[in-house]
View 1 (spheres, helix red, strand yellow):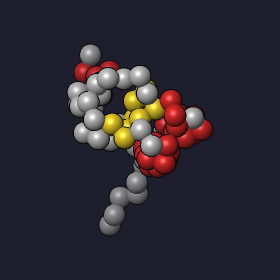
View 2 (cartoon, helix red, strand yellow):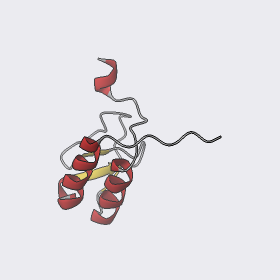
View 3 (cartoon, rainbow, N blue to C red):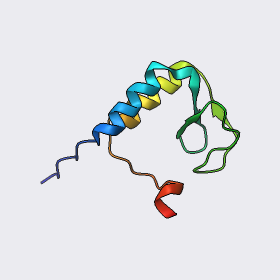
View 4 (cartoon, one colour):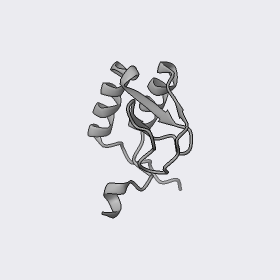
Length: 79
């Protein structure tokens, strides 16, 4: 029997909505698909320096990440 998928944290959905409402302030890391601020030179999660800055990609990624439970380890998780 399949286990029901957990519901995402409402704060993730709220963050995703804020990002989707202002995509020009963010970009998507091409190394790990994280969303970072537009001013970041390196991804804080994987240290990549390649980003997709298109609004469409930022919105799609924000909505995707906001609709599921966090599965990646972030710097805050290990400090």
